[in-house]
Image (cartoon, rainbow, N blue to C red; front, side):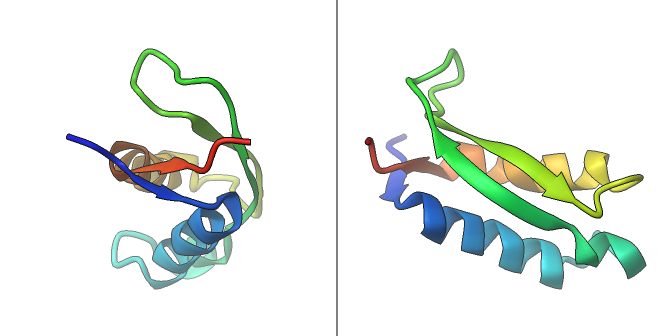
Length: 80
């Protein structure tokens, strides 16, 4: 399955929106901030991006990482 190509900024915004509106997250976990999404060469999973860091993620990493994994299956970022 081919992945949709988006900009780093667009992908970050999509992830951020999903976190903010997620039914799986509640309370403070909806306040997690994705600081940056960055491009890299394709890895073994076929993904070419990662999240550099997050704020307010303490105790929320597991669920947020599941959300990020969902986006890794569907999107790659525009190559630099």
